[in-house]
Image (tube, rainbow, N blue to C red):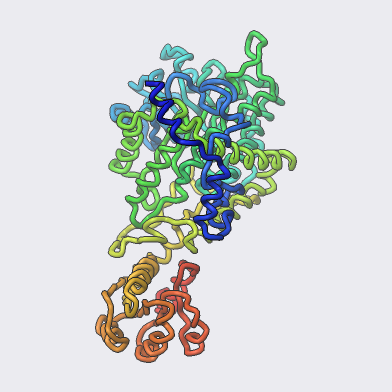
Amino acid sequence: MADSKAKLFSDFSSVSTQEWLDKIQVDLKGADFQKKLVWRTTEGFNVQPFYRKEDLEGLKTTEGLPGEYPYVRGNKKEDNSWFIRQDITVTDASAANAKALDLLNKGVDSLGFSLNKTDVSSNFIEILLDNIQCDCIELNFSTCQKHCVKLAEILVQYFQDKGYDPQRLKGSINFDPLAHMMQKGKDLSPVLNFGKRLVEILKPLPYFRCINVNSVLLNNAGSYIYQELGYALAWGNQYLSLLTEAGVPADLAASKIRFNFGVSSNYFMEIAKIRAARMLWANIVNEYHPVNDKGELDLDACKMLIHAETSQFNLTLFDAYVNLLRTQTEAMSAALAGINSMRVVPFNTAYEAPTDFSERIARNQQLLLKEEAHFNRIVDPAAGSYYIENLTVSIARQAWNLFLQTEDEGGMLQAVLSSKVQDAINASNTARHEAVSKRKEILLGTNQFPNFNETAGDKAPYVNPTCCGGHHESGSLSSLNTSRAASEFESLRLQTEKSGKRPIAFMLTIGNLAMRQARAQFSCNFLACAGYKVIDNLGFASIQEGIAAAINAEADIVVLCSSDDEYAEYAIPAFKELNGRALFIVAGAPACMEDLKAAGITNFIHVHSNVLETLKAYNELLGIK
């Protein structure tokens, strides 16, 4: 068999990279290879159109095995298992307990409890955890930052009273003052001093973490991938530095830090991000020289514990079931990259509190990856992929540069106090909103291919309650802008719907068959993003026939759809025939545009248009406010 394979492949001569490039250049017919085929990512590096085995030469990511330092290939050797997590906002201990027990029978093996600070008491925890086998699942708790120490004391005492083996208990307490500083814009740096006490209390529970890096907040605020990773590393290093300076041994400090990453829909880049994160964090922790009880270098302390959450930045109010496609690919990225636990955000989060149905779907999305696709069985399936290995190195390099820059400027705490982090992420938020408005970043169902017949009804953008159940005054620091990518398009479409008048956009298709159909489809998608009713047509024999049909349809907008060459013939007569009875638009950017403008035609839509700003202007012209 081996001989036959060798003979088969010997019939084909190997092709060098240069030969591939020469062939590509011929096919490009003189076009610039760099401009046509090399992708300049928003992460600040180039991606080639193809990679070969030789592109792996010199890459450190391919040298280790799963479970080996620096853990680029994952912390585990045997499988790729992870905890399926669902969060519960607790208002009543008994009700939350009943829900938790129900969830544990439906495939969940990680629970997240969000507690009001007034409920942090022994009796409340006793009721909340009643009949829950705490050593069989992962338990995670979130409450007011100033009450985390009290919560830790209660939990440790509870576990001791119940006779649990500390080695079998896994979970976390979400202590992360830096995250709250960026959320609220208030200086909470004095709260950082609670970290040492918290670590000491939870020392008897080796697998219970308490110092969190919630970089998912940056992801949900629209950060670029390298920014989330770079700042996450500086974030974790800040906590590690503060703890060791306070006298906490490096191995203990590192073993209490947990990273909570967001996962966007950039499929391969997110896989690379998580692989790069483990590698870089391992190198950072190693610099602190963590040692175990025997005085030996403790490489296990260098392992990054990762919880992943699907992104909320790209969730949409309209065509909400498309959110399932986004969160599914995001969950796939996280699972393939190797994480410790995951939460899939319910698809309806953008416009309402999650329902039983949406939470069920979110659970099942992970269960399918485990039970049907078997993503939990293979460790680091991305290993050796020429493309992903190179992405891992590229994203690591960009993130590392940001980490070093942050450290040179005084560290993460100083960067947050000076609002540099918040301002940088908010600038990315603005840039990404701009990209969405111009369709450089596509949100299916929102700025491209909207559902023409969908109405919002009672839907409205939903904002989760604050962590302690109250409202907080704004502080002196900048806070993160968490407006979703679709928010401005949604506001525009809701404005149209609430006005009580749904404008009719009529496609006046004439001339070249292929061009008129293509431009009609483009225009329908363009205008439907504002909630307009669009009427497409097969074509008209004359301008007069088309205008008459538009008037008969009571059109508010008439879009002339033809070829560039024919606009010189059709546009001005159509504009004059319409005579101001509706808004007149030309679909395209023809060479004769200046002549058309001179005749009074001012509205053109094309691939270079800013869709959002154009539609806002049309709403104003149509009297929709």
